[in-house]
Length: 112
Image (tube, rainbow, N blue to C red):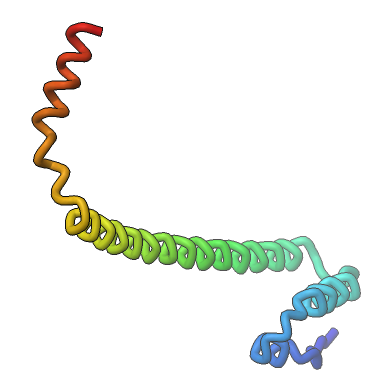
């Protein structure tokens, strides 16, 4: 049996229609129509191929999410540095009273 695909899968992908359900329905129908011809080995190969595609998509999603997390962390560090600089300009350096803070903490630990 010769099976030719006349369904415009490439067209759907390249134009970004998002009609995944059409592609999935087509593949399901094609497999159902060929179930009498397919043996166990062929079905196993189809399942392996689908699993490989799924794993590639999951890995691509993880890379994308990981890259986005790193970018946001860099922006947060820059924003924190800018806010700290602004606070130091407005209120002065708060580190000059750290010694008094330590003495107060020691006093609280000793007597309370």
